[in-house]
Length: 447
Image 1 (spheres, rainbow, N blue to C red):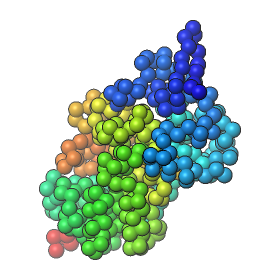
Image 2 (cartoon, rainbow, N blue to C red):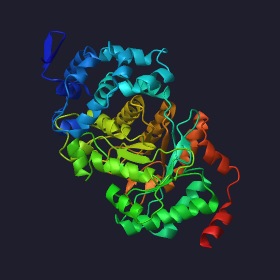
Image 3 (cartoon, rainbow, N blue to C red):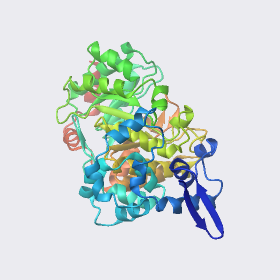
Image 4 (cartoon, rainbow, N blue to C red):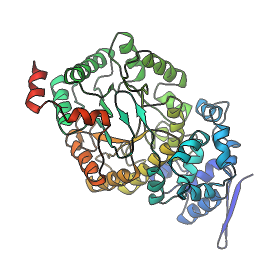
C-alpha cells in the first residue's frame, strides 16, 4: 500500500507505517544511529504531513511487528478496548491532534477513551505536536494510584526518594533517607537501586526501609530496584515487599534482554498483591522505561525509539502500576544527544503515558558525557511541572553517587511545588505536619 505525499515539486513515498512513523519523528541521535531517521528536515515534514492523513483505524490493521512473533504486539491488540475506541474511531491522526487540543476533550473524556488508544496511535499523534501541545494535553489528565499514599491528585507533586549508595551501606542510605524526609521527599516511594543484585541485599535493604517507615509512622511505600526474579526470591523468603520493580521495553526481544517476559511480570504482580500490604490501595508495580533501550539491545525491530517507548507503556498498562518512570536521559547521548533532545523525549513520554492512562513520573536526568547540563534539566523540570507530572526523583544533591548520573534533588522538588503551588500526597502531607525533628529521627535511628 504505502503512504504518499507531495511537498512542493517533490513526491515522497513511505513503504509502510513503521517507516512513516520513524521518518516523522523529531530528530534524535538514536534514530540516526539506527538508520531509521528522516534523511532531511524536508523528508521529516513530508512524513508528518502523510502521517496526519492516516486514519487511526489503520493502526489496528497494520501491526508494526508481527502479531505471531511478538507477545507485546499480541498484548496491545488483544487488550484493545473497541468500545472506548468508538468515540475517536473516525479520526485521522491529524484530527486526533486537533481534538486533543480542543477544550471539549477534558480530563474525564481523555480518561474514558484511554483504553481505546493503542501505544502506536499515541506515538503517532505526539509526532505532530509542538512541545506546548504535549504540555497542554498532558496537563488535563490526572491518573491516580494508591498504596499507602495517593499519587497523581490535581495540585499535588510526589517524589521518589532515591538514597542509593555505592556499597549499599546502611548508615549512608539511612542518612540520605532522613535528609529527604526532612525536605518533604518520599511520598511516591523510597526506592533504592542496590549495588549488589542478590536476595540477601534486597531483604536487608527492604527490612531497613520498613523499620524506618514503621518507627516514624511514615505513610509511604518501599522498593529495592533489583531484578524481578531477585525480588520474588526475597518476597518468598519473607521480605517486606511493597512495590515490585522491573525495567521493561516495547518489544518481546527487549524484555528478553532484561530477562523478563509477560508471564514473569504477571507472576510477580500476583505474588505481591497476595501480601496485601497497601492501606489505601493495591497498585503494586513500579516500571521504568527509557527511549533507546530497545535500540541498545538491538531489539527495536526497525521501529523508531519513541514508538518503542510508547509500546513499553502498553506493557505497563496491563498491570495497573503504582508508578511508571521514564528515565529519560539515562541511556546516553547515543540515543538522546543533548538537552534539546532530552526535553522533547521527556514531554513525549509523559504525554504518551498519560494518554494511555498511566501514572507517569520522570527522572529528569542526564549522563556526564551528554551535551546537557543543569540549566537544561531546570527547563525540563519546569515544563513537566506545567504538564502535571505525577512525580520526580529526589536524589541527595542531584548527584547519584552509585549510578553516576545527574538527576533532580530534594530541593528541586521544593522549587517545583513552590512555583506551581503543588503539595505532597495528602497522607504524606499530614505526616509532615507532625513529623519528628531531625535530632529525634537521628536519635531513634541510632537507637
